[in-house]
Figure 1 (cartoon, rainbow over the protein chains, first blue to last red):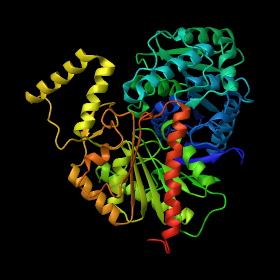
Figure 2: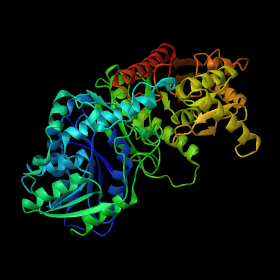
Figure 3: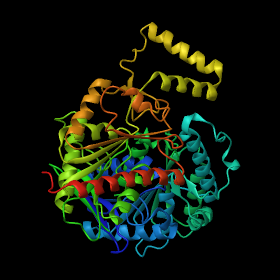
Figure 4: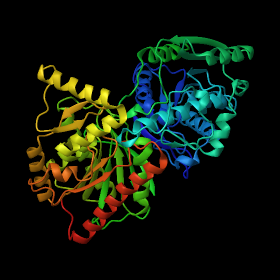
Length: 273
Length: 295
């Protein structure tokens, strides 16, 4: 693995480049896209393991942090959805330049999957394949989910164990305009952009094929699949058993690398070669 | 401010990001800040705390490196010849070497968050270049008063029946030998389970280690949040180490209103500010006292 910083001099992005170490696949490289906020910390290990495995399978891989996140330049409040879409395009340019591959595939997790779909509507050369794990489709529902997780975390984090709220109610009880979630700010711009997300946001997504990965009881996957098929995209669904609470504050205690999800991503990318 | 991400260490397997002041101080008298994992959180720190702290420090002229220990975050696994705790010390010393080379600093401030505190303590025993270590929510040593407060808080939270019932149940299990009795009242929260306990060094051994570290001229600071069930009042450290000769030089601080990992940004900012002040105080003290860098 090679740590790199790339992009404009004034707004450098951090990336980990995994050169192919197995028999060279040669047909395309892979960009891995983070989710948002606390979910980045929770899933860091998963993406690292995925990068390692893809590298060993012969794929050049780039993991990276969006502007204002992780190890990249920028304060927490400086990033937004539009910026992050542009960052993905930069990351794609970087990995294709480094690897010499003319084509790429993109993997996104949660909000990262949505960023992948939005970027695929803007990219000059459509990615060969998109692999999307638990994409965020309904932005308002996602914001509420974050606020519920935030309330639950405050309860756990409360000094001396004093209760400060009730996080046991349904998502609908939570407002979607909270200015922060799980230790990360949600700026007004970002809240508006996420709140505007819906199935319609996927209409312009251009790619030859999409793999959707998630639990069997995720209705949003079916919605997205239907929409993409209507646009002429080949869509396959890969259902996994793992039920993952992505928006959890328990990262100090847990790192998640669900085996079935990992296998599904690997299979989706390898079968597309 | 300049940031550069590097691979370093014996096999180049450690991954870190240098954060250097734009006008790099080259007099070699200040400190360099070493930041690394808190539990399983990679080098950016809980809620990106390490990144923000590093950049704030750089704006005040302090260089830093934030990095992942072997086998954590982006760093490669070590060869496996050393135990994890020993490997962590080797890794931290490699980070000091890297920062020394890049930023011309020769003394270091080591922030150990949660389990990171164990590694900070062990490194300070092994290396003479440390100007100070900060152990945040690391080793806890109980006193009769901390135990009493803990039980009262438990009653307040869960009610008499559940709190007392649970305590009696645990005592019965201990008597039956189903769980091991606590030795020397020295415990540390295990990174990996919210309230699991692993044994800390026995109190007198820890005190001897702290004296040894102090004798090297290394500042020792312990900080505790209100998020632990095991540290329950401001002077618990002083009470636990009364008559051991360490309370005269170990600085201790307690934040009853802050959780172990602050979730809300305002509280996180308070904690980060305190860490920053600690480093800057250390930096200023080093600049005042150091006539020549230690090597």
